[in-house]
Length: 116
Image (cartoon, rainbow, N blue to C red):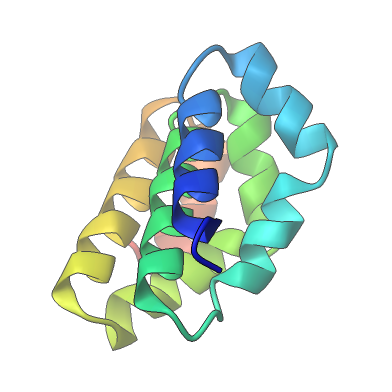
């Protein structure tokens, strides 16, 4: 468990690089793992996961769609309503980043989920 946060930070750095690198991690199932880890009892883990997700949601429309499709955005919205301020801050970045490259249909889905 001692290496979990540094390992997650490393993965987050990979996800913040080129879209191709992020896509390779997504293809390996990183977003599904993140979905599960958002329920982790350690706040530091959840915070790193949110930061990593914000790097994905800053990516392309396909990557944003994957976050929508697997319910990851729903979990992020939940964090915004029930977590500490530092976690809420990371969740806001996830949602804010998701609007930059989102398609009109994705913006509509985000609005319907109540993020605006």
